[in-house]
Image 1 (tube, rainbow, N blue to C red):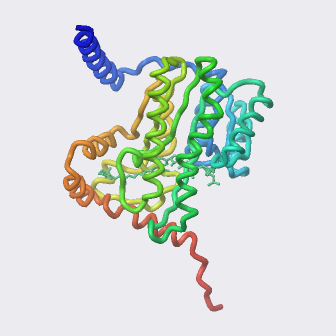
Image 2 (image 1 turned 180 degrees about the vertical axis):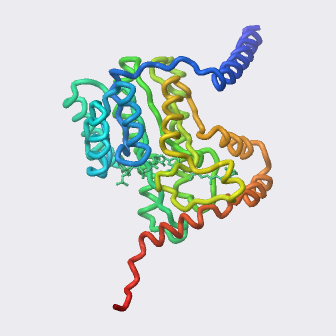
Image 3 (image 1 turned 180 degrees about the horizontal axis):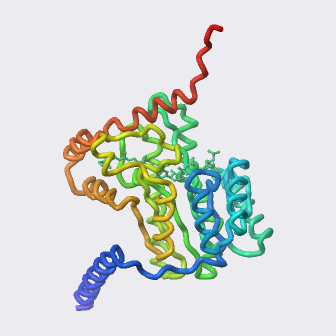
Length: 316
Ligand SMILES: NC(=O)C1=CN([C@@H]2O[C@H](COP(=O)(O)OP(=O)(O)OC[C@H]3O[C@@H](n4cnc5c(N)ncnc54)[C@H](OP(=O)(O)O)[C@@H]3O)[C@@H](O)[C@H]2O)C=CC1
Ligand SMILES: CC1=C(/C=C/C(C)=C/C=C/C(C)=C/C=O)C(C)(C)CCC1
């Protein structure tokens, strides 16, 4: 009897959330204020990291910027300060757990308060065919895009839980939900990031920690240069062009500010995610061929290889 009542309640809840989320897609729900929050962004010197810092700052948050690249991290801080915002920079390699824990402690001592929003944004890709790729590059992708999530979350989640207040954002990718050929390191790391994020989100809900929110951000190609050259069929690209970085971050911010658990940017990319789950493998293969996704990474890998190749010696 209790089982049947629970089943009925669960089905009603399922319907309620389908309805609520469909309405949310049309009507804009109220956003939460983030002024006064302390937001830590990893990979803050990069294309999306810089824009996240500026957007959070526009909303009145104080930002803590982490990157291995001191110069680009300082540029982000300068942009935030020009806007009248508060930014603190730290040069950190997020692949090192010791460095992450030590710097997290330093942030706490320097600022005298806890980080309340963590944006795990740092990411890399090897940009080589798997069989040509040095093992160290494959390991680096796994360490930056996946292992680092464990270190930063272990560093900041305990205080969020203790205060029952916080938000963990994981910038994964649509390539964590479906794959393309020739970026095995990246897909493996982003599928892992999605798995990590979802498991952590379920853990918080199972423990009824309702004040710590989570958002998984899965963008399609963004024009930051990271995947420069990646190209699908022209006719399909007209419907699905690479994203403008500002648009991507604005969409991600909208999701974060309404505590949305998952956002695929653009929405059209929910389709290949669904078709991967529902259609036979061979149906997906023919779709990939038709849309030019089967060889979309070739020009990207060529461009990466040429970028690294030494300049040809030309006779004077
Ligand atoms: N661009 C795209 O098409 C898409 C990107 N994404 C994801 O979005 C996120 C941001 O990407 P994007 O802004 O385009 O990339 P960028 O390369 O512009 O920025 C990434 C930043 O992370 C930094 N970084 C790399 N390794 C480490 C490390 N070990 N510790 C700390 N910082 C590090 C980089 O520093 P350095 O300059 O020294 O390398 C760089 O500043 C990534 O997670 C990416 O996977 C998702 C979907 C699409
Ligand atoms: C596979 C596939 C597609 C192409 C996806 C591509 C090319 C994604 C690239 C994403 C990147 C580079 C993400 C970085 O994080 C389509 C045409 C959408 C639909 C058919 C299935």
